[in-house]
Every structure is written in C-alpha cells, then in structure tokens.
Length: 109
Image (cartoon, rainbow, N blue to C red):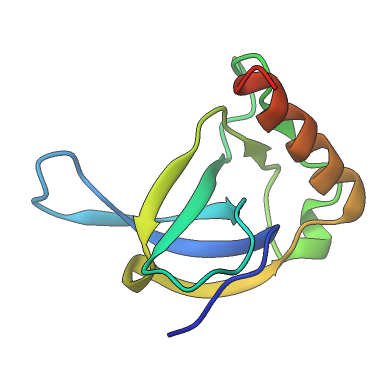
C-alpha cells in the first residue's frame, strides 16, 4: 500500500454526499506517512475569493503543477487511500509553513 508524504499534493476522488457519483479534486496530505488505509487531507480550490479564516492562496502553485490560482480551503478530511488517484507534486516550503500555521490555528493549538 502506498504511503503519501506530508505536504504532497494529490488528486483524490471525492464522493458526492449521496454517493451517487464522485469528482476528482486536488488536496494536500497533512499527515506523516503511516501504515493505514486512511489519508488525512486538506482540500484545495480554484475559488480564491471569500476564503474562511486560515484559508490562503498558494504562493507557488505552478511549482506544484497546478495550472490556475489555487487556495487551501479551511478544513481537514480523512479519505481512504484507494480514493487517491495520484500525487502531482509537493508544496513549496513557504506554502507548507503557512498550511502548518493555518492547521494549528484551526485546531486551536
């Protein structure tokens, strides 16, 4: 079973809430590699306006392989590893540091 590194940018198949279908979206892995079927992620979005506190626009999105302006959405999710399609890159250090600060803020740490 693959194990994804912290700050890896992945494409993941998000199921619709009624489980009728799914949509492929980008996300960032926020957990360290571990022996589990689950991956702890934060979603990414191309909707860069009206972000909730802690959400931010990636400064170096093109280095990751993202073609449009992309923001980290406030929120964390656990998905099964079999929903991950592939890894497309790794966050640049400034974006990784900002994500770490945002997660700490979201969780009140």
